[in-house]
Image (cartoon, rainbow, N blue to C red; front, side):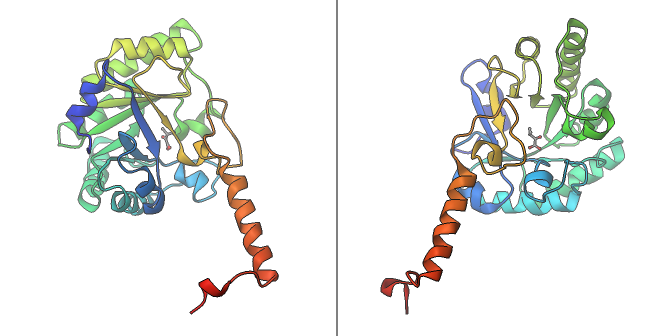
Amino acid sequence: MKQTITSIQKAKGNRKLSMITAYDALFARLFDEQVDFILVGDSLNMSFAGKPDTLSATLDQMIYHTNAVCNGAKNTFVICDMPFGTYTNEQDALKNCVKVFQQTNASAVKIEGGSSKAHIVKALTSNSIAVCGHIGLMPQNFRSEGGYKVKGKDEQNTKALIQDAKDIEAAGAFCLVVEGVKEEAAAKITDAVNIPVIGIGAGVHVDGQVLVFSDMLGLFEEFKPKFVREYLAGASLVKDAVSSYVKDVQSLDFPADAEKY
Ligand code: KIV
């Protein structure tokens, strides 16, 4: 059954939520109804488009991929990740998120940022745009911070993260992704808010988990973050299959009689 904002919020404290990314209809169809929600992450800029970070993803690309995912996963709650630079002020954020809602069937958008982005979240939620927040390690800060930096390593930063979470909740977000945060800090953030906290690289004491599908299926070979568990040796399975196909073509084993008109 397709989740709603209400059913997602009711899950907190009752059952763990599962989120996975998808970028196209093919994979989205495979994930449909298996997970609570699908995130069309701007991580697609790296694994799908082959770019070094997420920053050059555009709004039109995100809309294109969100439509493909919604076409494939008709019975799953889909979230569109707002790309870098599309929510720097309330007016732009509203204009761009309205475009996503008008041109796709996404049920919500996700934006990165803590307390300093609470006014943006408020501008969206008070205009009927459901928002998933994202705090901790924020990949859109990759260039400004000079890399991916784990957060919540000391008490001061943990306090700041808890304040971020509270401010994003107060601004009306229905759930919150917490990425790349020490387990103890993520547990404190999860306890501090009433909305579900979905962790990625944030340990087990959260309300659910999200993984990038190409990481968890072992398809993305460029690098493997420490927190990823590979559930499939995707890259080697695909390479072996293609190598068998090439051999069969060369040996005339393919096509066989049953594969001809
Ligand atoms: O873009 C993405 O896939 C994400 C997840 C890592 C949460 O934001």
